[in-house]
Image (tube, rainbow, N blue to C red; front, side, top):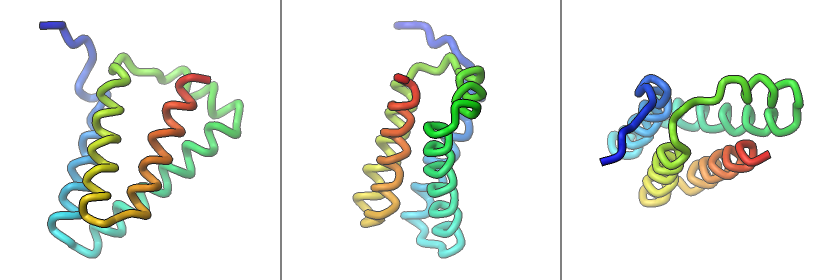
Length: 108
């Protein structure tokens, strides 16, 4: 078995977001819906800013993590699939955008 060499704290927010998304679609609590929608569009907006701003790109490049990209792909994929299954199409589309922008930013 391959040794995993990163701190789980580096994935904490992403795991928490995935957990909250799953909770939101299952529990159907109105306030949780607002949390997910607000956070989703905040992250989408931030990812777009990073692509536009050289200064922000330099700052985020310094804060790279040792977490393999496959972990992020897995969590983003869960987010998109769960949102599609529960008919949150617009939010799923936004998370797909976050995912694509993350990949693009990582490769530029």
